[in-house]
Length: 88
Image (cartoon, rainbow, N blue to C red):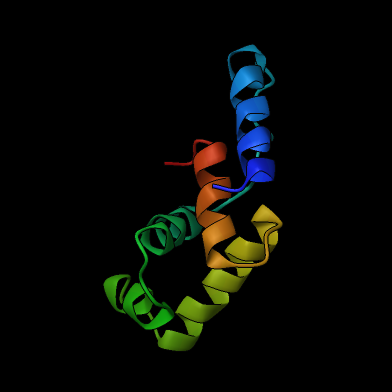
């Protein structure tokens, strides 16, 4: 681990027990929460659509909506943000 990353991690862990601010509300629909759970498990858009019985394009649109609502750029950040917000 790079020293700069280690320092950031130590600083964050040191603050962790003292951070009592509740996470902001993110208005995700039940379907979007399903999408977040599946993308957090590493499923592709096609797999997400299949598991939710949706057209692939609809699944992709839901993933895009989730990324936008969570204000993140990619699937990994979405999974981390959802976990941080205790969405699952």
